[in-house]
Length: 408
Ligand code: C6P
View 1 (cartoon, rainbow, N blue to C red):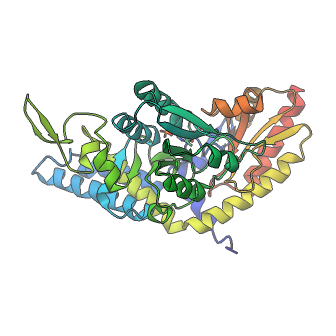
View 2 (view 1 turned 90 degrees about the vertical axis):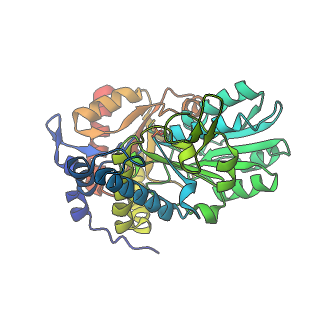
View 3 (view 1 turned 60 degrees about the horizontal axis):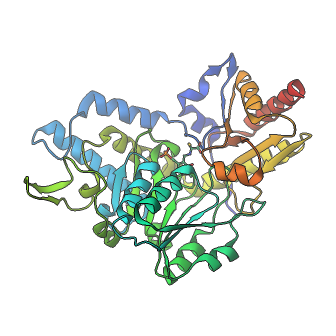
């Protein structure tokens, strides 16, 4: 068993925002699944970049441009190492998970035939549903859905039944943003491959808690957003196996992604540049690398073990509140508690929590099919990070109790 060895007091000092007050109360930030907070080390990297290095990359012979290019490519190597990709050019730096998924969905328009099947899980964020529906409209492919059960787990027996020789691609999140369910992606990848289907895993919610090894998973595509793992917004990763990235056409045309342009014909640059048209988020990419350094220095096993303690504690305390129901009770979960109190709209609870300094997300969490499944308008979602504490869980619980007393 992994012991909790995190020095939370020291860790919290790295996050200046945790010192601020909201509505006169100390901030209790429990909306980490929407975006994580940024440690000083990453903020310093951003300030240092704009203070000393700012330049465009891959184009200039001048010193600043070369330094910026080196720093950006170093960041790509950090991302490669973190996710254990075999080759650096299998890492495409994107603006985030949504962008990464759209690159792949657009690419498959050149591959799919009418009647081909692609498969999504019932637990997806809209960004892992809508691009594929758009792809089906363009190609005549058919979208199949792996159902879920009342615990918020995928019904794997149904997945195996749906999988066929017509299945060309399966896409599923590693962790559900709305419920926290950790999906059995190893089983999904292995079974899909046996049928010759490719697999894209949306790692947006897993990446802050679980260090995925793309080679060990043997996954074809893995996508994340930097801002959910202590990095800035506007940067993320598309990992793709080299053979797939060679096969897919580029998503956007422009500077950087070309080998040669004439008015008759353009040839494309090699990987990864083929998928990186235009000036990228240079500072964001470098800061993403710094965020990975920061999280790895703390260590993912310790992060996961500590967050699991917070999850168990919060679950137990919240369930003691009369009328409170938790949605998402899977055996394997990350530190997300999605709940409602009978007779109260989640938005009303969220608004009162905000008045008390507690930041949670309310609503459908960009996962409307999950809310439809449970026949609810939305939930209150408290999502925890390694810099949260049990004392903050106590503040949340007291605030929910107060909201309940006020609203019922
Ligand atoms: N979920 C949440 O509050 P972007 O916006 O591209 O960085 O990430 C999109 C996305 C994709 N997949 C999953 C599983 C996600 O959770 C998210 C973002 C946030 O749950 C904001 S909607």
